[in-house]
Length: 186
Image: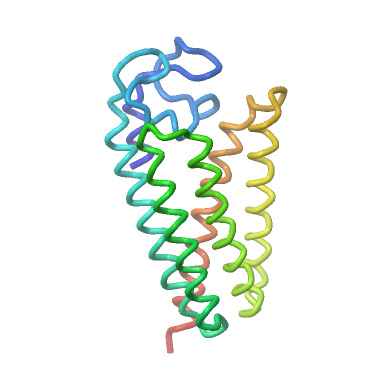
C-alpha cells in the first residue's frame, strides 16, 4: 500500500519543491500523509497512505500481542510489552491528523522503543541470537535516523536511511514471526 501511495504522490520534497512524483531519495514517508503535496497539488496518495499506516499499525500491534505470549515473559512484562506496543501504534496513527508531527513521532518512538527493548529481552532469553543481533542493528538505524534528522548538514541522507530502517524493521518482525511459528510447531 505504501508503494501504491508513492505512485500517486504528485510531487515536491523538502529538497526540491518542483519535482514530479515521489522521490525515494528525497521524500519522507510522512509526505504521503499530507492533504497537499509539497509542490502545492492535491495529494491523491493520502487516503492510500493513511490506509497503509493503519494496516501497519494493526499488524505491528498484533505482532507484539502474539510475541508477548512467549513463555520467557512474566505476566507483568507481557502486559507492559503489549501496552507499550499498542500505545505506540495508536499514537503513530495520529500522524494522519493535524497534530504536531515531531511530537507524535517522538511519543510513538518512545513507546515503540520500550516495545523493541522488551522484544530484545525476549530474544535474548529465547537464545535467538541472530534475530537479537539484527534487533540491535535496527536500534543503530534508529539512532542514525535521529542523528540525520537533527543535523542540518546530514539531513539530505535521512529519506534513504528512513526507508532502509523501515524495510529492516519489517523484515526483522517477519523473521521473528517465522522463528516463533517454527518453534511453536510440533
